[in-house]
Image: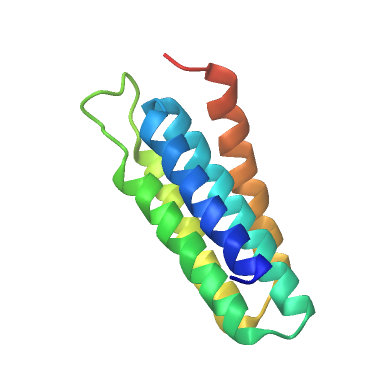
Length: 127
């Protein structure tokens, strides 16, 4: 087994172990961090002119933000979630636009927005 394949296998097993033991709050944190990581990877792929990897990473980031959006539960929230739902929708549209235009500036914008939401989420701690 080559080293990269072994590393990916380890990361997969480690990620599975972390998610199976994580609280719902921690799972959201992990999703947000995963979205930020995929955006950073897409930026790196663009810098290397690796368009296929860029598209794959942005696609994963869109899926992660979509998962965060689907996880919103207005019945359990004391405040309306329409603003956050709209923000997630905006992020998904902007990521798609960044993918089409190969625009690092848009990736930076979405990364900043997602980092801001994550910072707020991290601050509330596990409930």
